[in-house]
Image (cartoon, rainbow, N blue to C red; front, side, top):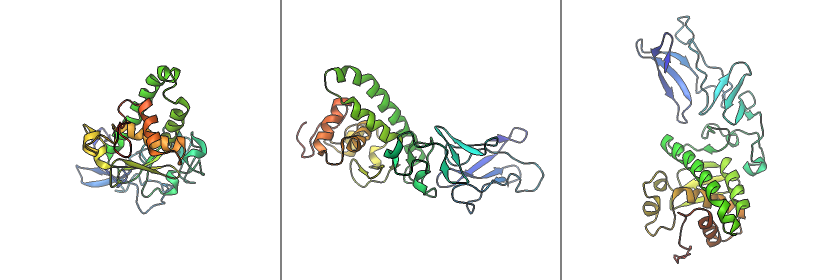
Length: 261
């Protein structure tokens, strides 16, 4: 970052990507600190002059995706405002109780291992920065594909638009991890999704994750896992695969038993 007379400074983040120290490389001293020993939900104010030279450095970055607003005392978190004093959002989760019974909570009240860059979905520490970016972009691509494809398909009775809408609302508030031990992914209550790491960002995910193409492309896996939630836990795996294919053309084309859908 450039600060204090447009001089280059280095930001040192923690394991989640929150800024913790800003270093002046010329003097090799910390000129801004936000201690990890502070309050877990971020209610400890940063030290803007740890070197005591009388020149305060103002950095508004907080948890990933947040900017501190001095006027309101809240952290702007894209879709919602976060209040560090209470460890909660000022607005309810846009998807309501589908994101969990506490619709104002921040990352299910476990900020030491999770973060929420846009006030919607949250990522666990198993997801790298590159994986988080890829998944976020794929959710956007998925939404755009559904928007383009469902209009003609639904007229023909193919893609279930109501289920697709429920699936996208689920993804908007999902808690995502990148450490599932086998292809392709799994969804658990209330809103946790675990992805197989080689599937994320792969140039040809269906081949890398599973040679027979049983996973499908990554955005179809996103949609598939969300459909498990939208259609209900008792809906069979093969039914979810068929419904995924109706909306996403690159979805898995095999049944759970390995037969063509």
